[in-house]
Image 1: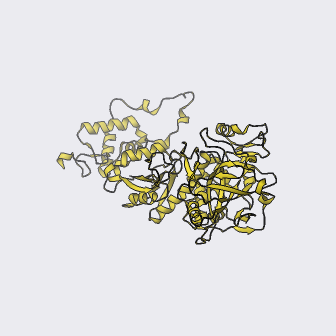
Image 2 (image 1 turned 60 degrees about the horizontal axis):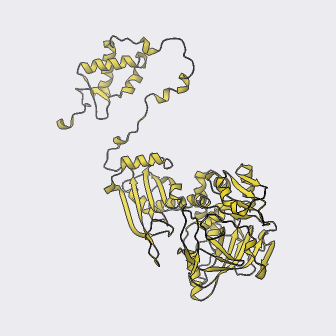
Image 3 (image 1 turned 180 degrees about the vertical axis):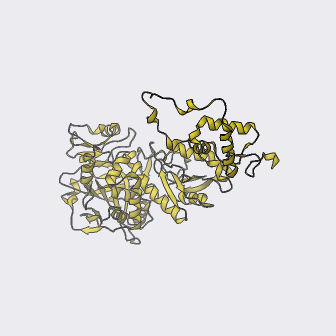
Length: 536
């Protein structure tokens, strides 16, 4: 495979987006140091550990773009390629991750340099573990993939956060119903292709590793685990072979600093028994740094989902912004080429996407990446009774801190959509943007610097009134076609700005000058002349 975790580190270093730290570092300081850094950091010497730690690989748009080998604004197209043309993984006999395998009593999670992130976290948590699982009933044949956190409890025991009703949660419930553990492989140190594909909200039975292959343009290599009947990612840095124990959701787990940029609450979850640890000869531990290494990779995932939903609703989206202010999970701004009713249809489609909470639809003249432009569209194009849509009782992400607390129940949320497209029954001419006169003819640089000798044209213009022949020439011009002031000064540029203004003043004083409904100059006696409202 051409795209790999190790190649990513090389690419980031070459781009100046990864700094290697040779000095000894206390593991307690990793999270704070990454937060203070403008680049990803590779800690090569962690006090008390034999394994280096890298963190911050995707906590900026630029680094994510480097990882996927394209500009950030086309990252979403790679996700769509994976969805539309998945490539199922290869099965290979072995891989670099099988270089070293320890099992049984030799398993010791405390040897892994897993840092504490937030001061209120429940303990050190594995944050970048792509978890592979299989439907225990065999109903769905494809391997399921997702990313979950693992709170280290004992040398071979962790927590896992699957309180949300996701696919792994469903598989665990199936296994627990038979009083059986659910085998899982936890893959640490993989390429962002796999991380992004694993966090896509795919329907149950979808092959997320097939999506990763489609994003890559080549199949991902999987190899067999030793102690469980599951594959793992062949070129991962570290793999934990494990089982979710069939004890139910009865163990305290958390808290944890979430993608919301807030501390999550205490959750109740099962436990995970680690049966074996496999790793490369010289592995690097990847500590996914919350929240931005979760937020930025989520943006193209939700953009792809929103684009797909809107397209299936028959609406053409020209741009989509999954905003960082909405944690790249909850908010979408969508520009469309509207036809009657498209704004509302696009809103309903976007809000059908899992986790999407608020959506704004705008015309394609609005820059969805400019918050001021979007707010301006809402201010000037929205009537709340007509354009604001609220849906109650929708499925929610439990981490939303605004939800009411209902113990023992899956929370539901309200969703809101704002149609900020120009309404069909509102005259379009109300929305002519300001365009500065003669902007295409002048540049400020021409006038900066020392003054040049000579008189400008305005100084040459007569101050004793415009010549009658200029007024007559303007009269002839606007008799045929009404003209804006700027058009007249352009048409009669050789006469000078002031002379044209004086000639118009001459016509106004004579009682002949008037304007049409668009503000263009015409003759008062012409058919173009606008009439006061009470005289229509």
